[in-house]
Image 1 (cartoon, one colour):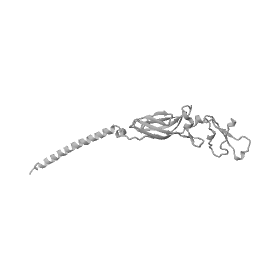
Image 2 (spheres, one colour):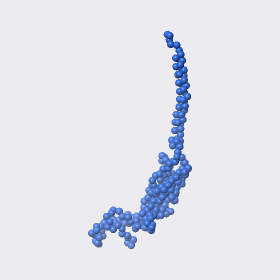
Image 3 (tube, one colour):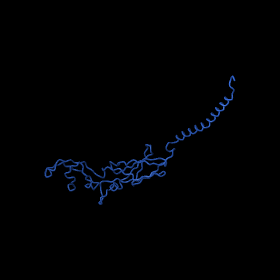
Image 4 (cartoon, one colour):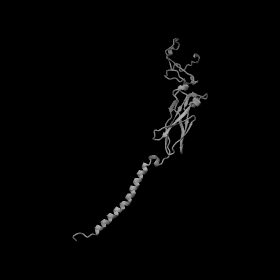
Length: 221
């Protein structure tokens, strides 16, 4: 509607224009007309060349930013991950930025992807809150990332992935290297013990043989 037309970035030389404050109804569909004029043509009544953007609905087409991993803990067999909503260009009356939770509300959910460190098999969990609590193996480290999702969308349901993070729990040598290391250690220990028993016996026999040879009379004397 003509009455809904708003002018932005008048006579700008920039190639970008922030029109966020003109798109307050995020479920409405908008188009932009970009006019190409010179400062000398501002009073020219002829319609200047212009381009029309594709239709855009912020609620269904805006790319969901990557969430932040606020903190995480791995205690025993439970991994807890707390996330922080990404912010949007929209602001409250006091000037503070709205988060995607403020925009999408109950339509927004988060998906956690997690897997054992050095493993490729991923598991996932979903929540509508800011906290994940999943069961894991207490002796294994886990890596994970989080992604915002709006299931009601037909397209662009999934947002950007958060930074991947890995836990670091104390692990024994057995957990780190497996049973093979203990087999190797056992073989080495047995070899050392065997050598410690056999070597003195061999040395003793050689000493006795040398002493016996020394007691024998020399031939021809």
